[in-house]
Image (tube, rainbow, N blue to C red; front, side):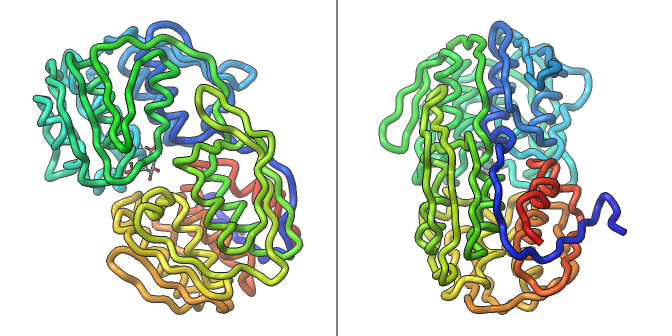
Length: 432
Ligand code: S3P
C-alpha cells in the first residue's frame, strides 16, 4: 500500500480527456501579493491551490492584509493600502522562491524590520541575485552566507537602472516592486525576455510601466487599486499532461482556460517540433493575459527529436524536467543546453533527472548546463527519488506511464507545492 509520501504509477494504454486546471502559480503569486499591498478588496477565482501561493498569502496576512476563502472558492484579499505592518515573527516563505524574492523587493522600502525564512530547499537557493540590485538601491538587507534567512531593515530607496546577470522573472519583479515605491525611474534590463506576468499584473492593478525591447521601467511612487480576476489555468502544470498525451498515438486531450502568455507558451512550439498535433482554440485576453483551450494528440509515428538551448532554455525552465523525462521515448532524443539554472531550483534538477532516468534504464549524457538524452529507448519501472521536488515527482509520474512495470514515486506529496490535484487528474486521463 502507498503512504501519502509515495505513489505507485502503473503504465497506461492511452491518455484522453478534457480538464480545467487550477490557476497559474506565477500569476496567483503576483495577484495575491499585489492585492495584499493595494488599496481595497480584490477577488480571484481559480486561484492556485498550490502550497507555494498559500505561502505568499500567509506572509501577506502576517503583514496586515486580510485573506478570506469564500464558499464558492473565490479568494478575497483586502490590501494594506501601500503600507505593511511589520510582523513580530519571521515570514515563512516555505518552499517558494517566488515568495521570498518578490517579497524582498516589496518590503525593502517599507518601514520596519522583517525576517524572511524558508524550508531546507529554499534555504539552499541563491539570494545574492536579489541582494545585489536592492543594495544598489540603498536597501539594508542581509543574507545568511548568500542564502535565507534574509534580514531587511526597511528604508527609502533610490531608483536604479539595473542589468540583470541572470534571466529571472523573480529578480525582475523584486526590483520592480521596490521601484514601484521609490521616487524616480527604475529600469530592469534582461538579456532574455523572462515571463512578464508582473508587468501585466502591475498594469492591471493600475500602475504604469513602459517596455522597450527587453527592458522595463517603472516610475515611482505609484499606488495600486484592487481588481477582480479569474486566474488562467497553469500551463506549467498542464505541461505534464500535454507531454503524457504526446507519448501515446491515438491520444486526445483537451485543456480549457489555460494561460497562453507568449512568454510562457514555448512548450507548445517544442511539442509541435517533436511532431505532436496542437490546436489552440477560443483565445481571449483577460487583464492582458492570453487564455485559451489547448488540444493535443500524438503523432502516429511517435515523437521525433529536438534541441533546446539559448533563450528557449530560460523560457522553458519549469517544463524542462518533464521534457527530459519523456525524451527516451522520442525517436531521435532531446538535447538540452544553457539550462544551468536548473541546478539551483527546488533541487538540482539536472542531477535528479539524470539519476532517475538512469534508474529507469535510460542512457544519457549529463553536462553542467544540460542533458543529452538519446531516443528510441525503453524504460522500466523502478523507485524514483523526487528529492522532495514537485516537478521531479510529476515529471517521472509521466515517464512511468510508458515504462514497463510499476514505478514508485517517493516524495510524491511534493506535487502539492504547485499542483495538489495532480495524481487524481492523472488517474482520470490515463487509460489502463
Ligand atoms: C517564476 C520564475 C522562474 C520559475 C519559477 C516561477 C516566477 O524562476 O522557475 O517557477 O513566477 O517568476 P526564476 O525567476 O528564478 O527564473
